[in-house]
Image (cartoon, rainbow, N blue to C red):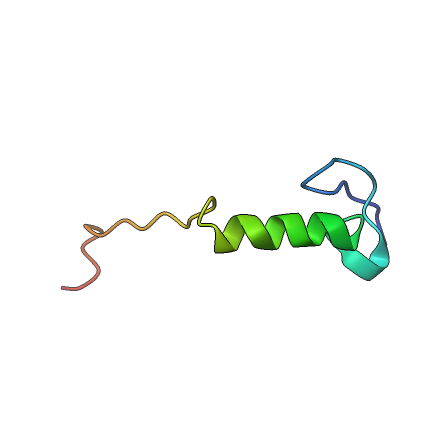
Length: 50
């Protein structure tokens, strides 16, 4: 498997925690989601309801 960088600290990710390098970084990411620091953009006027 190709080694990728952790999205939190940029170190090499470890297979056990992919895409993160450690449990700490995975917990930081979870905390950001739960704290609503991340969001998924929604285009409410996309015209698909017709």
